[in-house]
Image 1 (cartoon, rainbow, N blue to C red):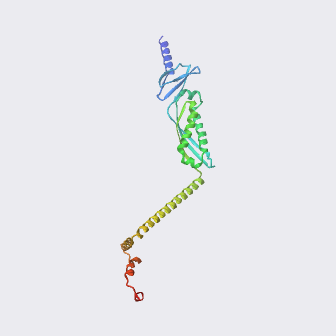
Image 2 (cartoon, rainbow, N blue to C red):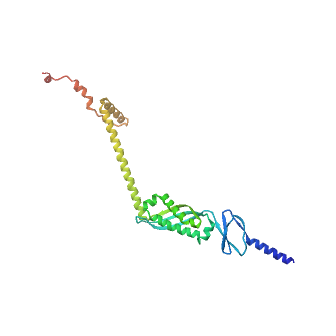
Image 3 (tube, helix red, strand yellow):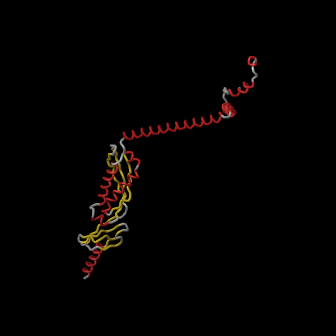
Length: 255
């Protein structure tokens, strides 16, 4: 009698161990009963019928998917390697198990093909300068295509664009030429503004002869302040004009 009770107790323990499952907060169990789905359960404690019910655990946390470098030919025939990272999570556990065989693998393959397609539609300059727009386009396409699987793609980021060595040298030369062009334009603009200011100053000084004399004296002061042994003093003709105008007429002019 005692052995029978022990056997029954062991059977009850085995039954409980095989029928009681504990799911974490971020897990859901898709339960199949005799091959037919009866729903998603969890989190917490769930009870299954041993030998009849089967469950598949589904993680609802956000998954970080690393997309390996893809060989891409842009619209302007430049060969580059582009890698990206995709963030997605399962919203509907039943669809993720029933409607697709392996949603991780399917999302990964779809991300690779979409990355090649979107990046190959633009030119290299757009690929380098408009990453945010490219990220949004890829995310929108992936989110739409994975919706029937119960998967939500929340974000896509182009991680690295690997250019050929020859293209890197060409872009460096182009950037250097662009900097030289901007420098020449800035210098020309500065010379133009300086010439315009000098012309304005000359117009002002020409209306006041005394201002021109004061400018000469200021220049002499600046030269003398440098402790030079030789001082060049320009004498304007206007300083002697009053003497010529006040000179008495000669005898020949008087007669």
